[in-house]
Image (tube, rainbow, N blue to C red):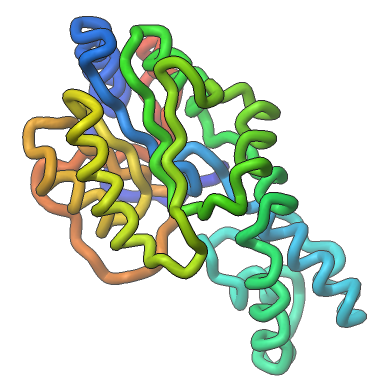
Length: 253
């Protein structure tokens, strides 16, 4: 996934190694939490597929050619439409219809199975799981997306739920993500000693920081909802998972 430049932790590989070392020392007493979308998974193939299908349905040839690379600003559909070659006027005329088409498909099992892994994510999560620590996927995806989520995990090679790996899904599509994540954080406190959490959404990262001040809280600088939320002091920021297992520093390239 091509990621924006930003102010990253100087040696993010060292941050990831620290999490692995602590997980090894604590084994099944340790808990490491991972968000999915824009943290472990790159959603741009899903986004591009939906916009291509909208282009076909609405007879807009430029959108039929939509590729993941056109989604270079997170969830900015207007930007993606412009990148596909539409004029500003065309984007404004089609946006409401395209957005409705997107909403009917994005939060479904069928489409989330298109997701691919962010750089280094599979290797890092496997490394954590192999220490015996409890891996908790804590995602705002609702339970109706479970099968597609498992399919994408299997396709990418992420550890599947079972044993020391758990998947915590939002109970309903309608439940707010902030509310769900805070409730999930309370559940994590009962599972074991949360030593680290990884999320792309600044609000959720800050909530982890407040709830678990002794843990390593890592912000994935991929994309997010766009809310102007400043990260709290002590939060680490990385562009992806690099090649933490071989101590290769991750970069924004």
